Amino acid sequence: MATGMDELHVVIGTGPLGMAVMEELLRKGKCVRMVNRSGQASVPSGVEVVKGDAVDGNSIGHACKGAAVIYHCAKAPYTEWPQKFPPIMNGIIDAAVREEAKVVYGDNLYMYGSKHRVLTEDVPNGATGHKGRTRAQMADVLLDAHHRGKVRAAIGRGADFYGPGVLESALGERIFKAALEGRAAEVLGNIDIPHTYLYIRDFAKGLVTLGAREEALGQIWHIPGAATITTRQIVNMVYEAAGRRPQFRIAPKLLVSLMGLFNANMKEIKETLYLFEKPFIVNTSKYEQAFGTDTTPHELAIAETLDWFKLYAKS
Image (cartoon, rainbow, N blue to C red; front, side, top):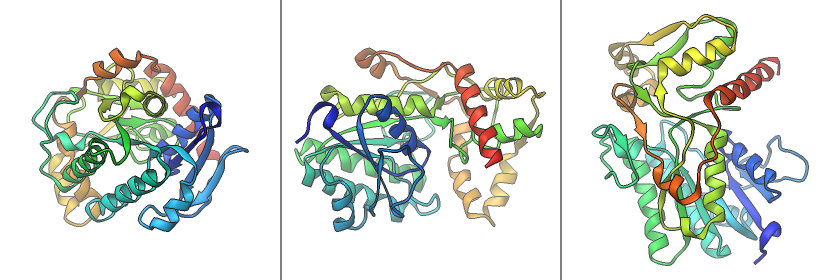
């Protein structure tokens, strides 16, 4: 197997997180292959893009050939997680086993549920909705495979992220695009309680660190970012950076519930609305003590994100 700078790092998924991981790997001089179901993506020269479907053993096996580290950044349709996500995880594990590659899984925090104000890695899974239960199941499958000696793996969990390429998150185009256009930000829940938001490039940096450090394997890590503030504070920062007066349009819980009766995506949002109704604080001290802290201040992250949205508006 190749070592050092010759190692092949395979990123499954070319959405915002996958692309951010690619960029971080390139900054470190790594050899990168991107994998998605179309085999097409806009990437820098020197980055290979191949077609691979994680639920097809032959397809994903070919796409991961020669990998030293596989980064699971794949997405499933938001309304079909229980059906589509677990087979993706199983396919990636099988491909990693064949290549004797490490797996680094970019996870979220849905599995913890709504009972805890501050989230640490040892909080038990408490989600009652199908999205959170699916995330818990996938993480359990991967860690079980690691502890049985089938594959070497680490899980990096990130809070709600924002940044270049991020359109659909709570801090996506409904905030950044709206700010640039002078419209009201569309927000959920109580915007005056603490809520951890993570810059996507910090998330990627953390995942790449997990892929490089043997002591990360077999564990869950919360990826650190800038300080936790309220949703109102961070949205105010976005509008001020855009040179606009902050405006808010808050969707009432009842409206979200009613819309969920007719709109599948809104029904899914209703399941995780609790994330925005109570303090949502992610403790990242475990990662910081093991690997240090190298995060981006919100001010710089917001400026870089606004620059991306300006270019996106012109494309």
